[in-house]
Length: 299
Image (cartoon, rainbow, N blue to C red; front, top):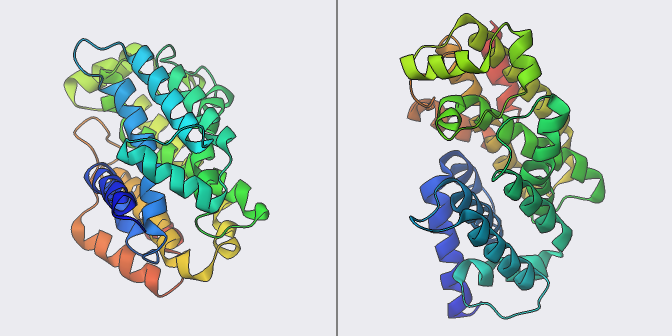
């Protein structure tokens, strides 16, 4: 690997370590040669999110995202030799693992929706968004993990499970950005309203209706983890500890929310260091950390 490529992957690693704490801890269990490729894919997604959610002062996020999309697609289709470290890294990753460019197109289709769409009436509507923002990301990582074609649906489900976990945890933050990433039909079914969500965020205290919604979406997230779990047998054995750790660490976010009584308006749920260490330890010895999390929660 050239010095330029090594430096490019190091940039991606720093982005992952700074922003994706749980995800980065899980990648530490990958074989050394596979970690950089996951970091590169994460860095592309992270930078895209930042262009939408935290644009530079005076910039037009739509223009910035369009320019970034064009640069990424040019890099992954080998139409240009990029100078940006993230693009240098992802171009190499796509070439090595044969990741289809259409997955990046799907991803950017969802990123553009963030500029115009702030509500999702139904679960089907939200899942349509998640197809690009989460399922496609799961499918991008599948070749890096040695997954067969049969493993792609499980990789997609895992991407959705991770994102829905984040949506549940970040209800307050998303509201402050003007968005609700949970189905409005579910909110109404739980007896809540959009204004009620805003009131809960403002007061720092979830209403009974919002807590019911959180419980409902936690159950839905766990059904996605269950759909993803068979994929553990469809990847290379050496990467399974990483996947078990990812299952466990994200599952612990849901457990932490439950420990708080389904309260999501008093700061982001953070898994204590001791429990994170336990999940990482268990992931090295086999078993299913996320299922043990559920069992403990329900006991």
